[in-house]
Length: 362
Image 1 (cartoon, rainbow, N blue to C red):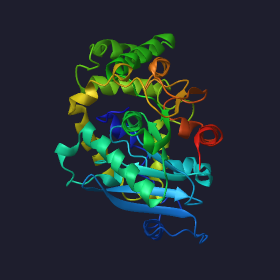
Image 2 (cartoon, rainbow, N blue to C red; image 1 turned 135 degrees about the horizontal axis):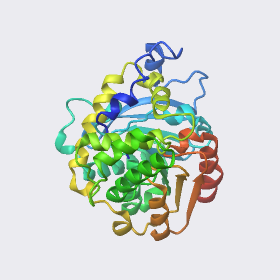
Image 3 (cartoon, rainbow, N blue to C red; image 1 turned 60 degrees about the vertical axis):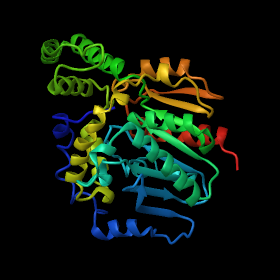
């Protein structure tokens, strides 16, 4: 889960110099994606960037697969507004051997952002309806009885609500960076940052975090700067992206793709616009431990060992409560909040050798 204020400037710092860095970034490549053509002319392969109407609004999806008769996997990004349209194609292309992989820039985010998006439609309820409508579209288009849904961070809430309401539509639910309760989430983020600052004697962090103080019982900071300071230190101490790869590198990696070429300004405005969702009381009051205790599909929760963006302790607690016909909690030992980016080979293996192998029925 991310909220973008001053932090956005930091995260996008590495993007400005991208346009000439990737040899694939040409208008020709972009137009080929929109046409759905693939270089090897395999009639069963799909590589297509498309605009579809979802919930009365034109939104963008990116579809990749080496066989369009394979089961469909829908990825729901986090944020709200943290659009990641090309990420799985770049880092997890192995999935395309076994799935038709669909990434979607949600309403108001990424390529799906424009000034014409009605603010009144930026509600949790509308997003839930969008997921259902997109699921029906994908089932019909690819002649599938059910699909797979992978939620990340904020997207885990949308995905879980979808499988709870429409279990007949899904083979399984996969949650990465599982969101559980915003209030407890924020309190644990702050405590992690302060604990790490004291452990490693980072005086600047200690001073800043002590000055702003922890969030209140509802998870609210005293102002936006206080939130930005906290999440900046969470990132500094590896609670967002662990190891050498920082968030700026991940942003660069995504934005160097032809899908987002020349779209930096649109992407940035979409992340800011999407913060309207935090005005929805339903989002602020989410506590899945109380509100969503049972689903009728297999559940796989993927947790980064160092995730303090959506703290793994909450994911564990929720997993223990949740009832499902089958459930499994899977650790990613070298990841924080983005296992699919930080440990792509392990992520691919989990989805193919475990989730698909255990749940798919032709």
